[in-house]
View 1 (spheres, chains in turn brown, cyan):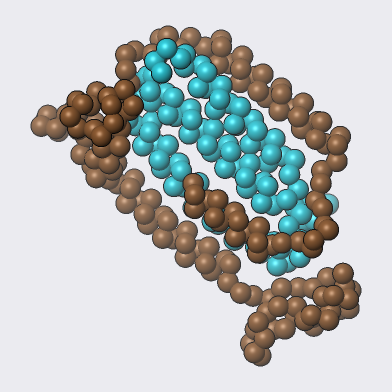
View 2: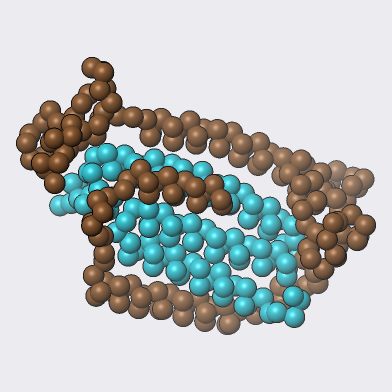
Length: 164
Length: 103
């Protein structure tokens, strides 16, 4: 999640508008969106309170970890170690049972997600490579310094400032 | 913690979800729309962790939430690359200006 915030900051910095440019939605649209949001939340609220959760709540859901295994007191969760073991593929509850009744390990999703992250990084790097950036279509084409002839793909300075 | 009813956790997840949906629907800034997407995903994560605490879903709910966080980061990276291309083509990140396909 910290990486997401850093990515967002990079996105805002790379696409910064002029200093006095404001992108605002009108007040009527905000009121309408607020009304729709309140309606959606009332639908969620009524669903949550009309459902009978007592049929689902059966005892503590998380596996009881003996207090010798965790770094925290037993009532603070102590789920870091079972999660880590599940990502390797070992489930701490039923070590030693026969293979028909083992609960799920998460080794295959872990490997798939690691390949997925590699592919996403390559794809994002390709999508965000330096390329031609247009200028506002006021003076016709040719306002971009092309990459092949020693430019850097940025619009020529005098055309950008005259188009503003 | 065990005396808090499950429905309160679900309502917190619901509040985050609704805030994310309204943010996605109203923001004209492209980066603002992406923040709404992150809010929706985190609201769902709170739901998963709440069910993992109170129901026999157990440790699986927390592992699901961990994978959702990883996939949300990957999707935010691609979405930011798309916003960068949008800026390169329109010189603005106002998503209302992307109307070339409008009939």
